[in-house]
Image (cartoon, rainbow, N blue to C red):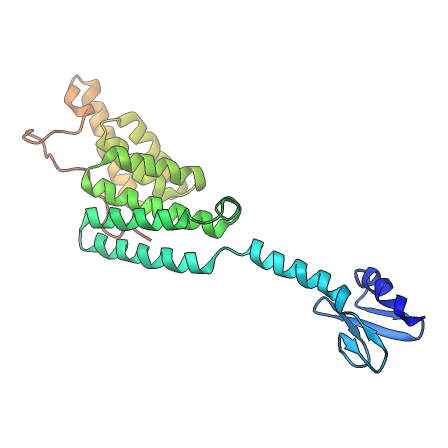
Length: 241
């Protein structure tokens, strides 16, 4: 009796795109079992209905679409708020930039945990947001906050030269010169042509040499009123992505 064919077809469909069962030829189109002669799931002519068998595939496909793709709506919202942060950074409105990057981070973290943990596109989204906020914190002189953001970034993208560079700037601002040197060296190892890192490394090495020579003030960033410049370490203007 023909009624038993669909079950046999579904099992065989995994092995061949075209299966012949006794007196009926069937084929698989886009993963669905259909009548070969008429290319339909429900074939009145041949007397077969593959709906129930294909429903299994339909359910799996729908589940995969929901699970395997990050939310495009959240991505769109994150990108819009990040752009506001970038615009504020360009205008040197550091507090506004930090505020918008923080909002974008909060939006990104509303994703389900499986999205944040499994998808490279989402990992990169988070890394960019934290790295951009670190740049804004550096411009504000909030070196500790900048360093924390850099640590988060490097936990996600350990070989991102830009994050090592900003970590080096943060360490320098905190007066942690050996750590600044190491971070900058890592940056240069990953990106040998990074002139900003090369120049800053020279400054840090000079400060370390001065400290070894007995100038204890060289290990700390000068406070306001110091004979040395009280400005925080400057970073390149086009730092965000």
